[in-house]
Length: 108
Image 1 (cartoon, one colour):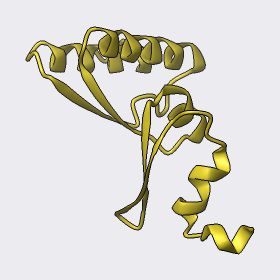
Image 2 (cartoon, helix red, strand yellow):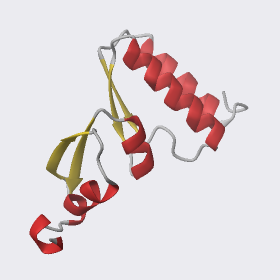
Image 3 (cartoon, rainbow, N blue to C red):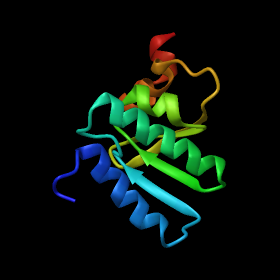
């Protein structure tokens, strides 16, 4: 496995987990450190898993990835949940405000 690219290593690890037939899988920074092509492949694979009925919890510090891949987004700040949002037409600042601790009234 050490001769594989970072993206292919990620795929092998995910495949090993899936062999256990989970109902939920948690992916923590699944595309960190891999090239753009491999990111697209991992995102496509995640979408396939969801289409097959598997629940995927993705933890990511990349805002475009979170907004592009999520149905529902849980925003955390200092280890605590500060907001939970359905990802329907959200603007990036809607996520950044609670993550940064900026109250809605402060920007109005």
